[in-house]
Length: 589
Image (cartoon, rainbow, N blue to C red):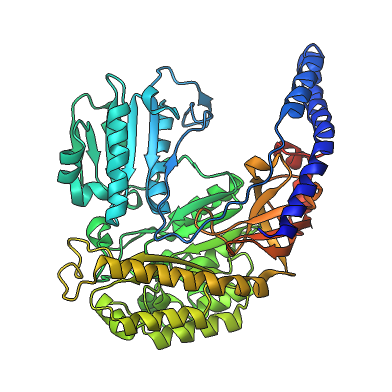
């Protein structure tokens, strides 16, 4: 953060001191009004005084900027700790307090696909009367949903299992599930004994059996949630965004990857299931729905697409013959079907391989702003020799052609990718070619990671394994190059532009003086943020869209600084009304 930005922050902190008294009275007045209606005025004065003193006593900490660096893979740790998740939902939708204090503690590691599985398991348990605690030592059941993609992820999973075993109270159970169980069950048992139950990856249905079991056991094979049908799901992300998993498994057979061995072959969720879940999320107020799969572009290749889409949406299949469409997959027709749903929302794509991105998808992204101008497409490398050994289905020329076409038709598109260094027989010339590529083709976000020799992968026994020291040097060099080219690229791309930003909340240490949000080129958890230090009085509720003028790029250059202009205009805005705004729980008067 430069001197000018620091001065802006200091000025805002000074202004916030004057606003704190006003804010205290406003909050107190708001709660007083509620108490007057609810209690006839008995508690009003007490509430007003408590809120005023709490606000005035709040420390005015200086804003400390934090950014999201590029990550080698999406390694998300999630713990269920909301006290509101302590109720049972009956079939008729009524929430009741559970009769028994069966408390759960969940730890979910890895990618959003794992998180969706955790949400499904949590939904089953909450519906059956279990409650959630954020204290592992108080839990009756500790569930660890593991990640087994890379050795670093497996090591973290083992550490979390070890913490759970050590922390559990007498009579409590530790249940281990997720990707690591399928391929490394023996290692888990050897390194972390005293586990009570194991569930295979995606086996969400048997979580209730595992929790209720009085003896140790395991259920390593079962129907995936896609095959099982409707399962209750407890959303654990903030209310305004959610993940929608549309497929499980993978058709690709990349030489370095063991995902097909863990997750199996492609299993696509039906259009009917996807649309049903999409509508449910929208009814629940979700503004950003993120489609996830191992490769979204493969969705539908295992389905009969002509039967999947109803007659009202047959136009979505118009381009190409039925055989060519089946070969291409059904992502674009699916997106058209979802975008036919009314409303102002974002639809984001997470993980589309470059060989699956065609003119149809690019044209749709250019024509409908609700489809986020954002692509997470794993390139891995650009040297043709390395790509062939990796068993990738694309070439350097095709990658460069795709980026050129994409940016010509969608100039403000944000591209995230992952790059691998140290793949067997990667030469210095191969690496130099990769380094030159990111200089010529700046990428908005890059996750750089070293090749991990995974047992069971085709690359495990390849000749020409690269030394770890060389991998580390190449990783650091590539990261340095990415940082050096990104700042100027981001400044030219964003500063002075007016963007649609989903405002998510206050920066915790800013004393309500700095808001944070994301534009459609920033995915939750893995990309940067837009920090808002001006125009905050225009924000009437959180979790909604606003117009923001971008004023600067922060350091490191993944984050932006902006000024709120006003509410983002859309046709449904007037219909929502003042009542909906007040019910949102965040109203400025």
